[in-house]
Amino acid sequence: MTPRRRQRMVLIAMIFSGVAVSAGLALKAFQGNLLFFFSPTQVEAGEAPDSRNFRLGGMVVPGSITRETGSMTVNFVVTDYAHSIPVQYTGVLPDLFGEGQGVVVRGQLSEASNFFAEEVLAKHDENYMPPEVAEALAQSEKAREP
Amino acid sequence: MYLRWFHKLSSPPYFYRLASILSPWLSGLSIALIAAGTYGGLVLAPPDYLQGDGFRMIYVHVPSAYLGMMAYVVMAMAAAVGFIWRIKLAHAVAVSAAPLGASFTLLGLVTGAIWGKPMWGTFWQWSDARLVFFLMLFFLYMGYLALRGVTEDRDKADRLSAVLAVVGVINIPIIHYSVEWWTTLHQGPTITRLDGPSITMDMLVPLLVMIAGFSFFFVWLLFVRLRGEILVREQKSRWAQELMQRSRV
Image (cartoon, rainbow over all chains, first blue to last red; front, side, top):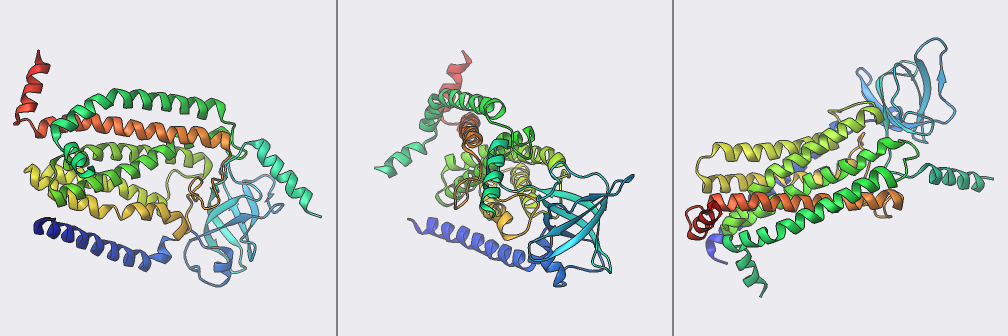
């Protein structure tokens, strides 16, 4: 390799690593802001902001969804299997919203640790399967339970 | 031996001929694979247990997003080779890949938004790391093309834009790992998981066919663009003038 080529290679490698290191440091500094939502455990530990809106994410506890008659208001409980937070929301729900499904809600925590949501988003997981497979999985899960 | 082949490959007239010979094969292969993948994805694959037929967006969204990122890696590697070894053909590859990668990235963004509205309940979320870093990929392509656009001298444009292309490649691993490093609305990886893909075979096969089809489609369009780019860059050389003379008849 000629000295000029080596020079250019070192130059581009140095520019690249310089930017890579600064990008890494910047992402590390903004770690908290890059999180899309807080888990119920983090909220219980007081890590979520209490004066402004934030997002809470977790699973909708099966059997916890109740609808108030005559209104669009729905109540449900969001859990990360360690802590649970009851949520109230009035409005249209996404298609994938349902019991046992992932959900991300944006809103505020009340004094009584109830979460009042302004927006409800369904979080889809990485699993794809036909209905028959899902049914078979649910069946075998049921069979394993005593 | 490899070095000699590499040398030969980097000669513009040789590569021009090679690209001309391969292009029809690549076009046939990509069209056949995309047709088969479309049929498999829309007809043969069963509906998803949760999303129903809505999940079929995966057959366009995932290949587009993948190619949007792969095209950037191709562009950055070509730009680096061109920058270090001053190989003209390498810069031509980088220039030709940029608009293609930008188009795939835009397609990934649009299909994701269309899927997101009914499934998540939102077209776009500014706080989602995956979404925002993927949008940044689109801006990197735009920045690359804009930088080339405002630099009059082609050699200077090659060198300047090469630095931008190489630096921007940092974004690629950030996009890939964003769903693991931070909590996001976007789901985690389905295919590239340590414990195997979390998608059933009858849904996965059309997706892989589609990804292969999109990849050949990209290489085909890359070669088509490259032939034009090579002719423009070599217009003063004898072989290019003879070739253009002949095709004018």
